[in-house]
Length: 128
Image (cartoon, rainbow, N blue to C red):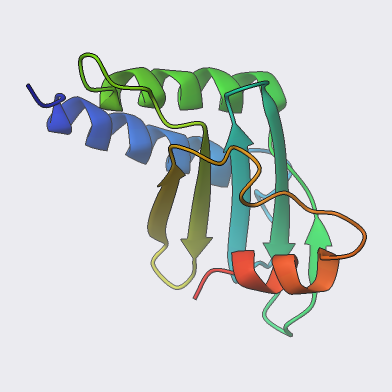
């Protein structure tokens, strides 16, 4: 049996709206936002703001509110008898805004940032 697609879509849109409205991003001149939310095996969050001039800065929305909404999304998307996703990448681009989401069910560390991969990973996460 599948999951409730309407509930999942609504929850994903709420997550995107919540991110855009977060004080960390509201009022800023941004072209894109990328937020990675890991819910398994541990809960953590990181994000980046991409400016119209091509530069970027690290910046994440409110952790508790974002994790809570992501957990609700994970629950809404979980199929009976199957594992839920571990990590999701939320990308928001202007104009629009356009919301794109990618979900990782196996490798919770897929989008992790390390000193060795910082530049490449930040570019990979950049909304297009």
